[in-house]
Image: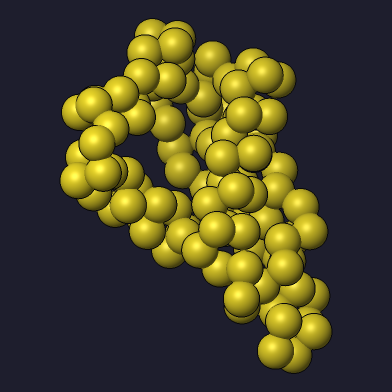
Length: 102
């Protein structure tokens, strides 16, 4: 989650480097209206998985090796599962995040 927060912070700073204001958020217009979790399509889940994995690799690559990211919507709750290896100890870990979307 820290990586996602850092990625969002970096996006806020993008204006400094010549990106047109707001263009980095254009993808959100493609999201269907209403209950996000209920509208979770396989394509949207795959795109979310790639976004999370990319952010983790960009910001935490020195600390962890991401093995898998899984995104699901179950009963209007967004479930995110991240499997990774801590580089320093080579310990495998799994973190799960849930957020009610209604």
